[in-house]
Image (cartoon, rainbow, N blue to C red; front, side):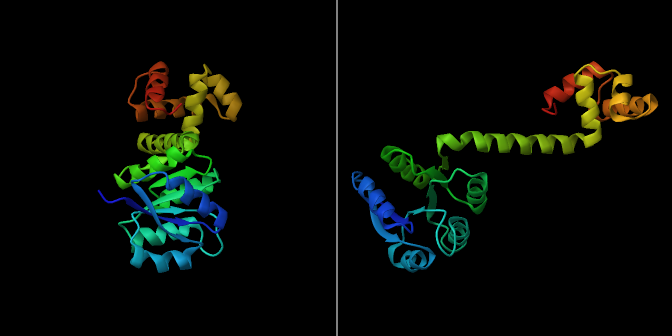
Amino acid sequence: MDPIKVLIVDDHHIVRQGVRSVLANHADIQVIGEADGAPSLFSHLEPLRPDVILLDIRMPGQNGIEITQRLKRDYPDGKVIILTTYEDDEFLFGALRAGADGYLLKSASPQVLADAIRQVVRGERLLSPALVGKVMREFQELAQDKTRVESGLTDQELTVLRMIAAGATNKDIAEKVFWSEVTVKRKVQDILEKLGVANRAQAVAEAAKRGLL
């Protein structure tokens, strides 16, 4: 098999040389070029046709997110791995939304970097282990939002539901939110109907099952 062709894009020469040196130890990976930013990267694409672009996220001019968007539009066959020191949510989720195939921290070991290149060529997507928790939390929040919308419960009703789960009576809730007990009773009934249950205990159980609490 032909070696995997890699193009390194980073505005720091010493970083490019370090990555090149690391990958030189892997016979199935060949660094075919370097670029210090968007202009040199896009001038290299057609003549070199890299399989994988290792891309820094903070560079003068266009940043890695903007470059990734352009690559995915104009050079869809190329795999993009963001190789960066930044763990910020803004960069991480921005890169993933732009279509990056991987997001790897520069603190990763040489073997992890080489394996990451092989993974994206196989069509897999990857993330630095240190960042998995961030993505999982984001996914859980999105899933909870989707579940809440599907349930039809309002934010106000979710607040009441959480109080019920904590053991609050209608009187307790009324005092807490400055409503009459009649209003609270009506809200509780609305919650039961939306969750399709008969009583408060079932409402708490169903809400917990759906991940609403």
